Picture: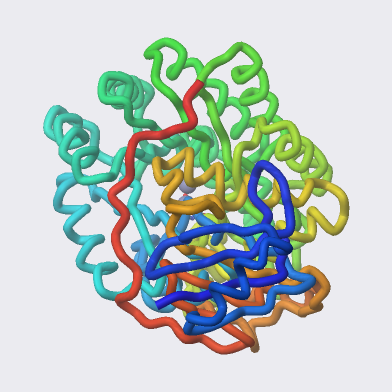
Length: 467
Ligand code: URP
Ligand code: ZN
Ligand code: ZN
């Protein structure tokens, strides 16, 4: 069974060129120059020929940070693995890496089993896992080795959320030592949760209860401080460090400085920090609750710094931190007390499109768009060259992208299982036209052709991105 994609412009992280692509089974079999005549030969026996004239042919997106069915604040994020991966496919993303969560007093391996039972047989695209470590002890440190053998070699820790996920500096140090010894990597939620909790208590005690207080009680300095502290602990232990969902210029400064000295420090940012701001959190009538996530949205001035970081590779990639909660039934838990609003925002469907606006506006180049949304996530998380590149031998995870189509984001037309869009009414240039996941057409001409259970679990190699 073969598929030919003709007349398009192949865009890889290394550049773009006109080429025809032959897909055989689950893999890319060959690329050919358009004037070679090969595409005509391929087309004669092909099951399907896709005309990509005027379109880009890019490696399917890899979203390295999602939370499907995640327990948080007494509720669960609203997307299942089926609905979330389906929405991802609609937006040109063909791999997600989700976070299994170790609860306090439980084991890493039982968390991994639990996340497999949620995801296996239910995903429309391929998926892997990171592991959230919330209980550092001799047993869980030892279990990190078994996780690595099982293809889960990235461990998220929290300097925020005391009493829930929070880890002390000593616990972080011990986990980093283990990461150093095993070649694995610590991912850090870098916010000073101890100080933040005091600011939150003071705000509530003085009657400041609106959603905007979520942002005001988590100042960017406390993200910068935690980021610097995590970098220092990584330096002392010699472990690589990956900062998740970086939002503040203060934190980016710390990452930039560490990278300039050659430390293995990396960071991702998310579309919400590039396009939304504290002004959204300040929307009246509790509307701001739609934008509550941690770290919080920042004043607009931070956005230019983040785009700069993306250009200079101080920000290595863009993930969504997709963690949707419905406005009506879930965000509403925090009416009258912003600290009870479930933290998280939807976004898995629109990451490729939103980032493409950076190309349209001249913030990043076309090949950098592919690099930060697919190739670097593949290398960072041990999936390259199976994923993240249009090349013979790679999985046929391919997004055909129409750079001239126009669309308007709306909860009325999106496919995520959430009753609002954080980008409602935003007009975009560019749109996915066809998506292949391991050789299967899953989205084509505004229709979904995929199925739950097509996606397979990806046992990941160690990071291929370390210096
Ligand atoms: O607010 C957020 N980011 N929710 C998801 C959990 C996390 O910290 O990534
Ligand atoms: Zn986090
Ligand atoms: Zn997250």
